[in-house]
Amino acid sequence: MGKLEVVLTESEIQKKIDELADRINRDYAGKELLVVGILRGAFIFMADLVRKLEVPVVVDFVAVSSYGDATESSGIVRIIKDMDESVAGRHVLLVEDIIDTGLTLKYLYDYLKARGPASLRVCTLLDKPDRRQVDFQSDYNGFTIPDYFVVGFGLDYKQLYRNLPAVYALPPGGEEETCLQGQGRRNL
Ligand code: PRP
Image (cartoon, rainbow, N blue to C red):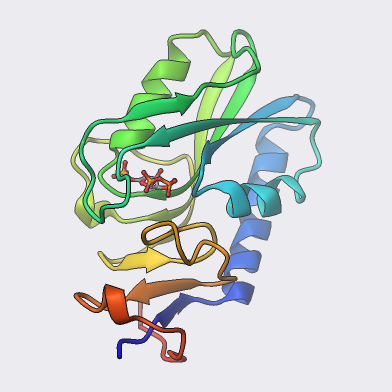
């Protein structure tokens, strides 16, 4: 049976979130921030991040789907739930769990930019640059990782594993039989 291998521990993730929040607090000092989480994957990262922010924060969410239950992106981004807040004239921070092909963030960035925010930046926990199909860079990125299929801390495989407190790699081909016995650690 395959094992989930720890890629990033809880403490590594929390330390990184502290660093990201420090930068965001400095950059947005004196401003109100509209933090927009991309469901479903960003919900845990965003919950931890906003609790470290010291500027006035309003939260909102968009839900999109590009992967469905597949491990490969369909390449088509669909908005399932739009924002409730208006974007015009506001400082907007899009929060995402991972940039892979870049299709999701590129689409949403362009979509929100067209609504006239005062500023628009992106904060991501993970970046897999090897997988990029469109040019897109995060303004605040936590970790750059190799092309593992990762789960945990909000990230899923077939909607499972989002609740795991750390980030794990799914062994290639072993997805259906994976269990949570792995205590190994990959070098990044
Ligand atoms: C995942 C992830 C990002 C997106 C990144 O979402 O949460 O939103 O893929 O991939 P990309 O850079 O190739 O677009 P998914 O569609 O699996 O939905 P989820 O957030 O509900 O897990």
